[in-house]
Image (cartoon, rainbow, N blue to C red; front, side, top):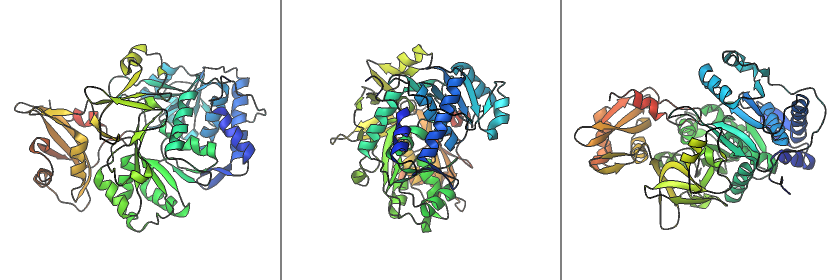
Length: 478
């Protein structure tokens, strides 16, 4: 009775029901549910023979691969904690996370062997062990399953612990709210070092028996090609994924007719970008989440995608949300993480009376729909008025010739703070800073208009394609 929510059984149940159905389409290599289950059993048997015990950590350094999926399910069955590390990090950054997590085993894809060697930690190559056996599922519902390190925009990265129960309920909520069917073809581009690479569509797809087209990285042209050739029915990405696809020369003529559901999360979706996809017949369904909530919090029903464009939606089933006096979004529910790994101080700071502090500012309309207005730390006050960068960025991205944009507040002697816009122009555009400021004045109150504009070739982004505003801020004189 105590282990009904564990994820290790998901693959076994599905493999028993539909062993020959394709689970993963990886670079045109098809892996059936039966084959994936066998591979998971091999990993689990090998881990058991090595003496790994419940609660031990298995760190990985790999791109999205079927082998990594099998390893995940092996960890789930044995109560091991998978710590998927980002291949985008430097060796010193990885060394910190390895020393912090103290894995019993470090598994590395051959492509990243040189990077792993630079950490000075011993590791083994990622490959399916030649071991027989089908060990039983010994994991418990409250056992940690994933140890996911946050981006560390302030101080050292923190490891968020997500339990089996956290992952179970976030997937059930996703299924009830927007769903995955056994006949879906899912394009999965989110990296597996992020909880979204598991808990947003992927794990639910393997539970429901869908086909997952698994990509190692996001490439706009290739994704458009895959939507056409693989007849993709659903996908999930962050706004930058949809932005880069919309900027591709292929976008105007790409056959998107199979795409029934496209989900976006990670940051507010600019209205101008929503309109670009709507013109191609695709409604982007918005959502909102964060790693510490495993990650799903808000979802906009597909039927409201157009009517409530710009909103993140309502809470997923089993999830509660509230707004603090400062308009910070708070979250409570079985999806909320168990805490930060070996960091009770940070856990206590993140949790207030049972509510998770998201650090995001939100608004709620009279129908109960929430809109994310920006980061609490990103909001700035100009002349006594609150300015939310996301609103200003929406306007900048609607200007013809602007390909990408980010805004942050900087100190100002007269107004307290003013906005600086960082803008990436489309290749043929020749806009000046004054052009952009003048266009902004037409749609924004005076105190919201950026005081200055800086042009960049590209914005710095994280592994999840989120804009790294701390890096932008570091280049602005105090």
